[in-house]
Length: 138
Image 1 (cartoon, rainbow, N blue to C red):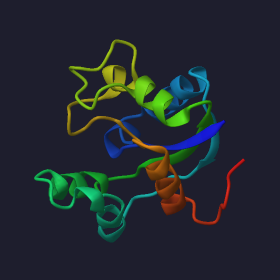
Image 2 (tube, helix red, strand yellow; image 1 turned 90 degrees about the vertical axis):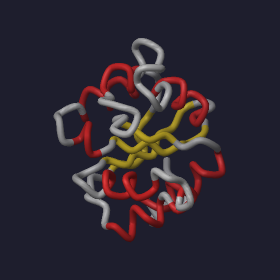
Image 3 (spheres, helix red, strand yellow; image 1 turned 135 degrees about the vertical axis):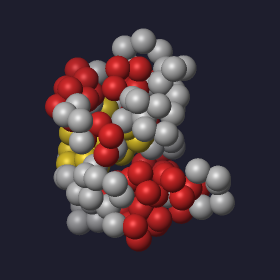
């Protein structure tokens, strides 16, 4: 078993899609090991997305992620990072496979309902960012 981080973003959390998304993740074989709801501060969002600081979308991403509550979750499953990326679909919901989280719940490429870690290394860092009290969840 391995772990990854998912974040239900403000667009989905604010429009009543949280339960549906969590149910879809659990149906896909993920176990929720930690979860919380928060509205990120600007400093938190800037730190979390620091890897994108030089990208043109950084400012709008930070603004979006601080616009309302989000729900970070540490998830566990075999090959969790790869599997979650498959289940959530392409960043642009117009390109996401039918039945994926983004195909079903995202509004646009920018308001795409959910974040998923893109590597095991980033998953460990991202889980630690939101759940620093846990050395190893489980």
